[in-house]
Image: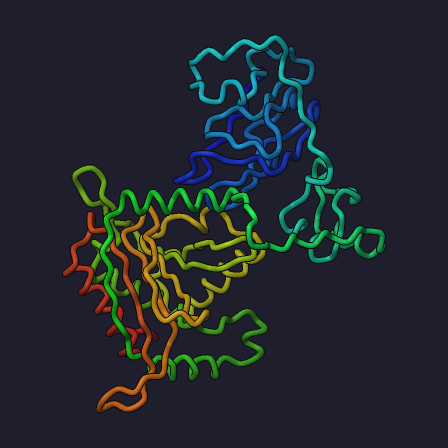
Length: 402
């Protein structure tokens, strides 16, 4: 029996998605679990699988089209089945219609759209093609539904027949730059944060002189062979995440969200870490951070960073954080005020470590931290104690390596 396949809700915050790749053709057979579309959400580009076996009767969307959750994408049916006309109404005409609603009649069924071969490629294959100067339009895909794989790109590069990739256009003064989908969604969420989250801000400086010594000592004991075997070097962010996780156990209201007339606390301590990638800022999440020691956190953040750089993050890697750590110290920034991510209570902005002469203590290494807090959830006194505990934990390193 014919059925429409709709755009599923691929994440907690997803309201719409953009079709960035179509891996099927009208008339082709699909099996349950086959990847049929690549959908860009507010967090990542994800693969959408077929929910059932059948034959593709009609494709109702085009690559580049942005649709709300629940919009019909294609029609699946039996091989020789005649599909009712109302099943082929395109989301362009009836995207807002709920399931019981009557679709606007069309004089003709929507014509199936076949995706050009040059766009049927995995994200990693696209990235590799850019690096090797391979024109995907000239590559024959050997993956499912003709999808271009990394091996296909490597083979094309080895033949030396590929056309060099076009260099990115240089940005100049006076230009008008269109927003990417990710930029637009980020802008919308930041506006939502400023509009709906009444924040206050707390700043403090931590003396991390002993922490710097501890980090150096721990990393010196990590042998070259251990690093080659996958053991991660410990970063300052790993210590900060460890301190935040301990502090959240002492001050659990900082994990909360206002729900109606109550504050709902998080079930577990998941901490987001802002990571810069070639495609922009992304915030993967260290799950159950309170159950990890600093070496385990280092391994988790390393794995997440590698997945982010290679565009391999899953949706589960991006959801569930109750707080985020954003560290701009590597860029020489001493302090800044970060914006709270909707769905979280606070965000900790971390600046660079500076050499400072302190009276009666001599030369010390100080690090500035600024905590932005949702005043609907926590008050100033409570949040100040939370931030002060983070400072004390970073200064007294004994608890960070337990």
